[in-house]
Length: 479
Image 1 (spheres, rainbow, N blue to C red):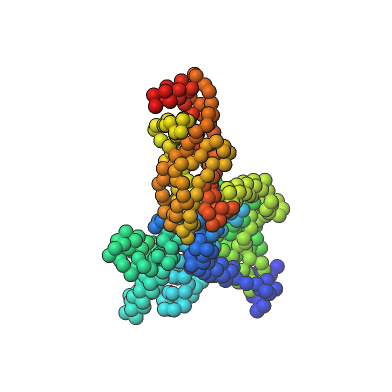
Image 2: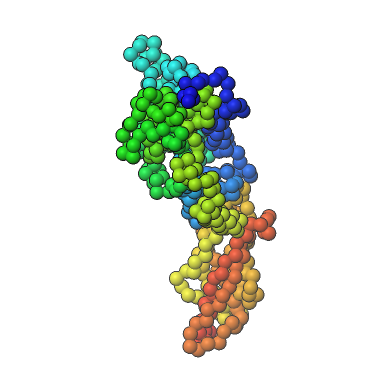
């Protein structure tokens, strides 16, 4: 029987319409980078898509602004982030690492674009095991160019990271007045320095030794998790269960085994592993090995020996991968529930903030026109969370016997400013007649902006203390 590994073909049906997964990763990286660079500049009524502002201590999310007192939404965002990443891992392995992680995108730009395409320091994109030879003077000069360009890109990337904490419209004002913003400059330089060290010197060692995500992936994987996986049944067993190499040359394989031992899947791997050893924590699911094996095996008119598939399908041969299994449906249900809660709470957001606390004195009693006037005083902290100034007013909505003495006129508050006011409620009518204790009355207040009272308002329930009958009579008899 003729060995199919030695029968090369010029064309293969397996390459018809085939697009390397590497190119798809490039597209994803491009759109992810474009999105993160553009979205900080997009505003709706002065509100950003996502901004945790360290300048005015406000949180922007989906073009809605929240004060720091409203950060009850942040835990929900963190839950969506972590549960979402875990769900993606159960479904598609370390797909986030290989396709979306900034570290991976930076390394692709540095290695495949700067080193290989611009400066020609690497001969081929497909060989990631051989580092550039800097012993030659010309390569040393190119290396300086690589470093300068990398630093420039790191400055831009660091600035982009800060735009999610410092609005871009204020960022450049800070950059032009560095001496007045030393903390800002330290953060910018610190992030830039870390990025240069990480991308140029630490490289994929960050993924292997630093990133904690790789340590938890094996706990999340199951037989249906999609990953880069080598088919031992077709290619032949290259390693034993202890990861000891059994086969080094093609001649050592059985005639029916299809692996050519060309090592293309090894040389293309950015984390320097051999996918034929099985699941390894260093694998970031970049799928470069799938591309490499697809091209090689297509020459023999055979499908790739390394597939983006599951243990159930490739190793156990128990049928197709189950995508919609209980675990995935559970993650989807939890994420949907959290997202719905987040949207409901976000839509119920008040467009102004107000906090009302009663002052230490219970009440004051005065005799006015022969009647007893009972007054309660409160401290009001009110904030205009909008981007324009508004005139505000406070009124009692549920008791026409209790009036507001102060403030008696509307007051203006500038955007983002907290204003402290003294609120005095009074009544000249007899609201209770108890000889045993003071009477506590529930009063509902409505604070609102005069120019948009239907939208910008807040309702608060407070307590009005009315004195005992004997105290009231004693006070009135003295005056």
